[in-house]
Image 1 (cartoon, rainbow, N blue to C red):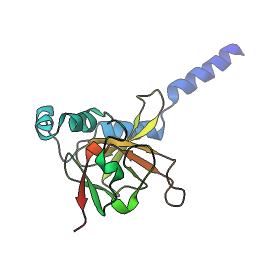
Image 2 (cartoon, rainbow, N blue to C red; image 1 turned 90 degrees about the vertical axis):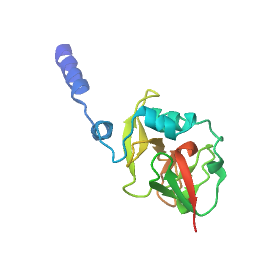
Image 3 (cartoon, rainbow, N blue to C red; image 1 turned 60 degrees about the vertical axis):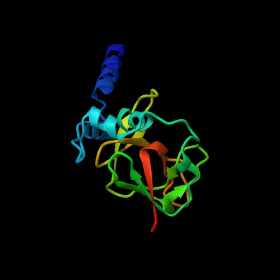
Image 4 (cartoon, one colour; image 1 turned 180 degrees about the horizontal axis):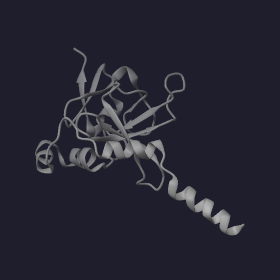
Length: 161
């Protein structure tokens, strides 16, 4: 009986391949419309922008002036200028990072990040692959329930004209 139970547990462990893992692999191998060498990205971006967008870093909480920006407009990717989030979907999450309850559909890609020892959904610009932040299920319940927790340094704000 012990051998049978061990065999079942062993089979389950090595056969697990969730949709999240498949999506993460698809994003890792994706070729983006805007591609540049590391040197080209370093020439275009500041050190902190490069660290966040290209190396999946995180800026210090409460360090971005965009966190408390309440003007009307659209938030674009700092790497390639793709529109990502609208100001009407921004809310103050209290976390210290700009937060949105939804993205502009089709302009954000997702993958799974295990850097902290557990699975988190990571967000990337769908045009250049730049790391934006993560998405959580603790956003406003009266809208989507999602919180797109985004590094302000990865964004460029374009005010409404």
